[in-house]
Image 1 (cartoon, rainbow, N blue to C red):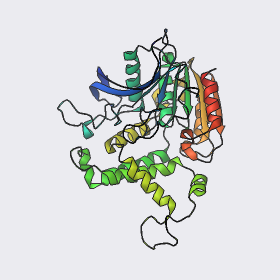
Image 2 (tube, rainbow, N blue to C red):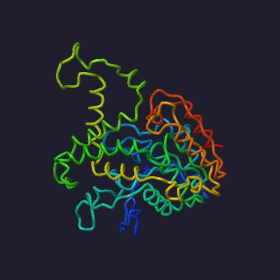
Image 3 (cartoon, rainbow, N blue to C red):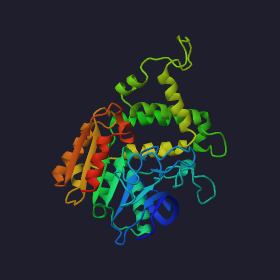
Image 4 (cartoon, helix red, strand yellow):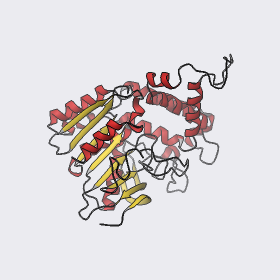
Length: 367
């Protein structure tokens, strides 16, 4: 066994060509990733964590731009449900993102940023890039692939595309395809970015970025991550720093101030073009469509164990979508467990302190 190190930030360039679902290709790709723990002698203890839309590889270590703790420190760490003392934990920045992996901000062969010349990608393309990374690391099979939200989409896609490489798949607050409502919310965000005069058709890397449009996109999306009950409990109709309404268009209400803060702070760490590409990849996801219109066909004959977790206040990826996946897995004869957890915090519940979720994750991964 190699020496154990936590939060080791790595970067690798992989030669292709990498052919993509949309018909394009990349001659090579760069992948930034973090590892926690160590690979055992027979390479059987690797757990891949897949991040959500605006996440990154810094799952349990401070973010280099914001200094904030990793986005899943509640789950990943010594003595926690995903324990680097027992497993090699890997989290890679997805293809198309902006934290070191190849994306629209990356340099093209002509030494200029790709911008909108970067090929459109899919969730399956992201998974293929992760598989290439694991090949590079000498990991033929995963003990588990784990993810929430878009990370859960990747976990499902892993099990459908590489069933022989996945012992277990843990899918949290996710879906096997995007609903019309979710596509609609994403389109609002994309249009906000593209309507910003600073977007310049995506060619803004040597100029002022479209921060206003990206902030609005983040604000609209952030509403979908919460719940009405959670917003009411946290903010209600309380005013922000004042005793009376201003009868103007400043942030009179606490909830307005909160959303503006979320939008502005997001622009400091994320690239607008990456937001366009990744939301489009999520919208294109339809695992059933990839398998003749039957989700069960995607998992027919699989030996992968599955666990699905949903939250009763999540209206972005409601429990009904998890149940549809469970029914398909049952029809395919796949071993699957499922739990709906109660939480007032909506879709973001999977990122928050949820003791029951912690117990489910630990129980499934250590079974």
